[in-house]
Length: 56
Image (cartoon, rainbow, N blue to C red; front, side, top):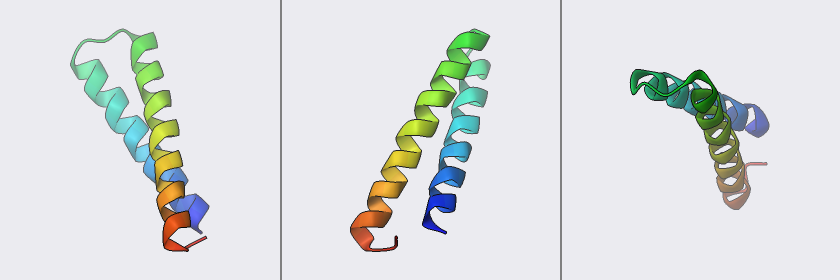
């Protein structure tokens, strides 16, 4: 369950980063890069926090 929460948080971050970067007139490739980095960063951070709290 904790892994699903981490993935969902990453997806929300990726969608937000993609939408915001496109609104700020980034190119399509840049927006995809921002979304990918945001997904990886937030998913890893969420998983690390859950491990520290003992939720895994």
